[in-house]
Amino acid sequence: MSILVVGSIGIDDVKTPFDERKAILGGSASYASVAASFFAPVRLVGVVGDDFPKKFRQVWADRDIDLDGLQTQKGETFRWSGEYSYDFNSRKTLSIALNVFEHFQPKLPDSYRGTPFVMLGNIAPKLQAHVLDQMEKPKFVMADTMDLWIETAKSDLLELLKRVDALCLNDSEARELTRETSLIKAGQRIMDLGPRYVIIKKGEHGALLFSRNEFFTAPAYPLEDIHDPTGAGDSFAGGIVGYLAGQPKIDFTALKKAIVYGSVVASFTVEASSLDRLCQLKQADIEERYQSIKVMSYFDDVNF
Amino acid sequence: MSILVVGSIGIDDVKTPFDERKAILGGSASYASVAASFFAPVRLVGVVGDDFPKKFRQVWADRDIDLDGLQTQKGETFRWSGEYSYDFNSRKTLSIALNVFEHFQPKLPDSYRGTPFVMLGNIAPKLQAHVLDQMEKPKFVMADTMDLWIETAKSDLLELLKRVDALCLNDSEARELTRETSLIKAGQRIMDLGPRYVIIKKGEHGALLFSRNEFFTAPAYPLEDIHDPTGAGDSFAGGIVGYLAGQPKIDFTALKKAIVYGSVVASFTVEASSLDRLCQLKQADIEERYQSIKVMSYFDDVNF
Image 1 (cartoon, one colour):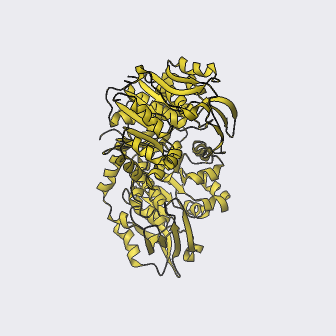
Image 2: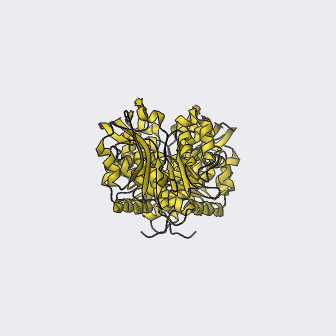
Image 3: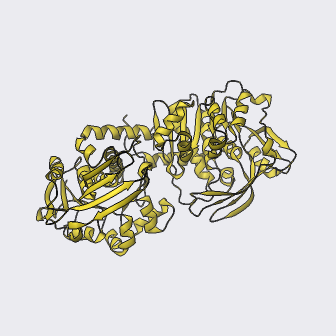
């Protein structure tokens, strides 16, 4: 089944301890849509300026991503520039220019309204809600968010949470949103706010998945070297919803596998800048890494 | 088979955000020996002062731990006092008095020399080596260590590493010892220093196990509340070697299970102060939590 991905689309300058890349394709929707495209047909909703390079558009076209929902507006594309610390544990935004993104109003083509799976990539919760307003009863909706919205648009975010099946956020955001130190408690508290499933990302330490009655602790794929972590979280989320869109049944078992597939796609993303590694990726590469995560995290026979 | 546990034995004052306990049993050997005793017969090597309470000695006696290697010396027992930050992420030592521990020389009773399994709990690497000097070819030796020895006794530690099968240390210590940011690289670098197996502890994020050709990422048991983290690492290490001592074959498969059992025992330790929870623990509690970690970390059928 198809998946609708909405989020930011940007042109990034990224400095890491090992590399400096200018004017590369970035943004939550860029990563999430390509990640999801390995598993299901994707429809992209976003906005770019009239300066947006044709080669970036080609990245999506090569993945057969439907671009009917991509608006091109007069002006410049959203720009972001950031720098990572020597150990990749922190990131500093050097500059940001919203440009055409400042007045972005996601507008869905009629053909998108019935899309069964929805990935609300990291943008203002009000815009995420505006997408849902235009949709006919989707089967599964996941939202990503960030500290900025918890701090500046908390009531919008709380409204949105009542309308999503799953929320995906990182550990510090989960703590900030709930004021709970324990991630186990934080995950449970977030379910009280609406989502049936909560996914807490822990970077190199994997992720936690919560539902009312079940719990899953997902390992991360062990990488010796990280080239550029930008887009890891967006690829993770895109991979999750993409995988689910290809499944006959959405339950905890499917969610668990989806999270591992999401981790796998994210592990490839960070091996290069921008979408460079994802553009080279084959289905077999994903499958191989998925199987190897299994080998690296199982410790005994299965006899539940 | 039997396991010899050596390490510190102390009387602790511990302050946590929720509790303050004075004059409780502590020390690396105290926790490691009791943790190991759930899996195999334990022989304890350590030193206490003549002020050491009888009730603490009884804790080990109740677990059938052999105390022939426990020296009682004139003077006071080692004392430590510490305080945890509100989220348990950092710990401050408020005071320390080595007392009889200052001139501790582990001396093995003749009956201990042939012990096949050895857990060198966290004490100066020179003392850990001195224990090995007195032993006849043990089958498996694991050492724990800490930042203090990496900083003040690095050459002793490097000498010791050539003589152990496994080293157990936490993530920041692994980074400090190897000067590698990536834990995956750090684990591999430590194997170059001698140990066939390296175990990197990541607290609430679980642990990593390395051998030359295999890798295992172990989840931690998810706890809603931590009461007192003191002794978690020692219980983990004691549980690991204890479990191994009960196995017919020591290989990567056994090590993986051992690490999960070690995590389980540590998860009980932190639910109460001192050894309070471990003293109440039943074999069935351990087995139940081991099985539930499996349920919480497996995500697909086994078809390697």
